Image 1 (tube, helix red, strand yellow):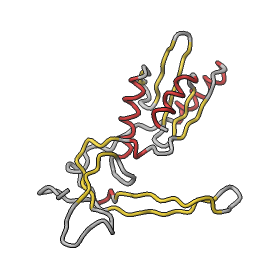
Image 2 (cartoon, rainbow, N blue to C red):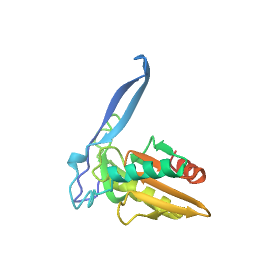
Image 3 (cartoon, rainbow, N blue to C red):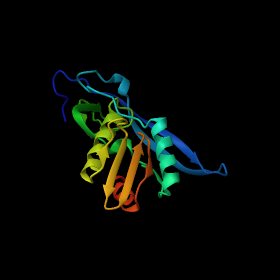
Image 4 (cartoon, rainbow, N blue to C red):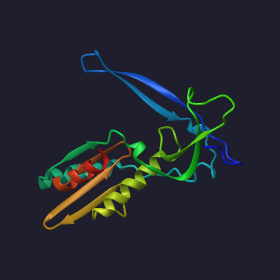
Length: 182
C-alpha cells in the first residue's frame, strides 16, 4: 500500500541464528523478522509501552501455596509470545529487500505485533489479559500479573511474565490457556 501522507515507515531486518542441541550439535536454523523499533516515534507509532511483570514475591507465594496445599503445578512457555499481540496503532513498515520494484514506494501496514516494536509487551499483555478474564480469571489488586479463579471447589492461581507463564492452576484452565496460545 502507498505510505499515507505525514507518516514515516519503520525499517526492519532479518535475524538468523543456528540453534544447537544439548550435545552441541547443530539442531536447526532459525530466522526472525525484526522491526527496528528505535525508529518509532512516540505519539505516532506508539503511545504506551507499560506491561506488568510478575513480582518475585508473587512467584514465591504461588510456589509456597502450591507446596502447602499440594496443588498441581504447571509451567508454560508460549513459543510465539510477542507476535500474538494485536496492534491498536497504525504502523507502517518498509518492504523487505527483494519485494520492491523500481519506482515503487509501497509499505506494509502491520496488524499484529512484531519483534522489536516498542509496544510489543503491552500488546501481548492486553491480549492475554482479555483471554484470562474471558475464562473467568480475576486480576489481583496487588500484583497485576497475578490472576485467580474459583471453580466449584478448585482454586487456580496464575502468575505470568511477558516471556513465560508460571502457573499453579487446575488442569482444565491450563489446557484452555495452552490451546489459545499454542
